[in-house]
Length: 111
Image (tube, rainbow, N blue to C red):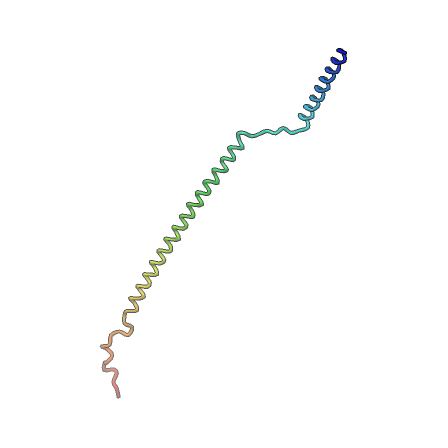
């Protein structure tokens, strides 16, 4: 009886070891190991985020510049319009026909 117990225990241990070694063999030879890149990948992600942030800041600055340029352009246009308006008012206030003193000269005689 003791011999049977020893025989069953030994055969079970051998069976477990054989199955375990077969499993390890297949695992090592039939699968591709996954490796995590802990150095390059995070640095690339950080660089990408940094580029997006700087691009966003540059876009905001260029938008502000464009708005300021448009504002300056509009102000100069309005100044030019007001200047043209005052010039036109001065021209319209000048008499068109001249003075009335020369209307009764000798060249125009009635019959």
